[in-house]
Length: 400
Image 1 (cartoon, rainbow, N blue to C red):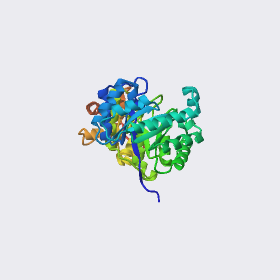
Image 2 (image 1 turned 90 degrees about the vertical axis):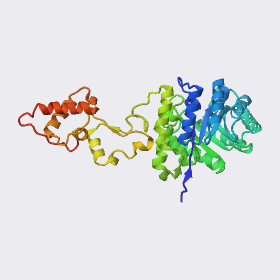
Image 3 (image 1 turned 120 degrees about the vertical axis):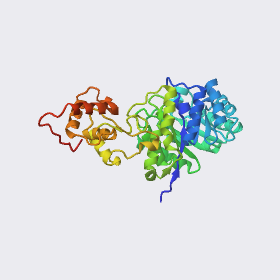
C-alpha cells in the first residue's frame, strides 16, 4: 500500500525568481511577498542571497523578523563570507535553514570554477563545517547542474556531506536539460543512495518547458520537497511554477500519494501581487493564473459548460481564487447570447431577433464589446424594433 506523504513547498521567488533580468524588488516588496507566501501556506521561503548585496542582506533580516510559521532559508556559496552573511542576517530566527551551493557537473567544475573535484570536495566539507559552527542545524547541499553530473562523483560529494551533517540535498536541473523520465531516474537513484532520513528537494528550470513535469517526476521518484516560484519566474525561461505544481498536487494528489499545505484559493491573489511588483504581463493562456485559464469563447464549449460545468472545466476557478468566464466573441454561439439577455431581464426572447443579433455580432470587428450587458441589450432592442423580415426564421444549431 502506498502511504500518503507530505510534499514541502519551498518558495524561491525572492532568490532564484528575482535573479531573472529586469526583476528587481525593493526590501518592502520582498517582505510583502514573503508575508503573502507564508499566508499561502508555503513551508520554506528562500529569503535571498544575503552576501550578494546590502539590499538582500537587509531584506533577509527583515523577512526573518516577520515570519511566524514558514522556515526562512538563506542562500550561500561554499564560501565562509557567504555563510557568515546568512548567519548574521538570520540571527533573529531560532532554527533557520541555509542552502549551500556546491558544484555538481564537470562542466561547471572545469569551465566555471577552474578547479578540481578534490577542491570541490574540500570546499564543500569546509563550508558545511563552518555553517554548523555559526549555528545552522538545517543545512541543504545544492549540487549545481546535477542533471549533467557524474553520478559516482555526486555520491562521493553527498556521502561526505551526510557525514558532516547535512539534512537535505537539492537536485537542480540548472539548465532545464532533463526529460521527466531522466529526472525521475536520477532522483530515484539518489533516494536509494541517501535512504529515507535525508530530505531530497527538486529544483527544476523551464528551458524546454518541462520544469513542472520534471518537478512532478521528482516527487514521484521520492523527493520530499519541491522548489518553485510564483508565476514561474526565474533565470532564462523561469523555474517550476508554484501555481501549476500545486494544481497538480490538488487534483492528482491521490494518484501521486502526496499532500501539501498550500491554501490554494490564495494562489491567484499572491501571484497577482508578484506580477504587480514586477510589472509582469502574465500570458493570457498561463495555466491557473492567466486570464484565459478559466475562460471560454467557443460556442460548443459554452453550450457544454452551461449544461454541466465539468464538460470542459474539471478544475474550479474559485478554488484558486480565480474567476470562470464565458466570453462573447467571434467564436460564440447563440446560447450565450440568450443566457445573457435572459439575465439582463428579457423574459421572452424572440428567436428571430436573437438570430439577427447573432449575425450582427459575428459581423462586428469588435464582437467582444457585447460582453457589456448594456450594449447587448441595446442591440437586441434595436433589431427588435425594426421588425422581422418576411420569411425569417431561426433554427438553433446543436453545436452552438
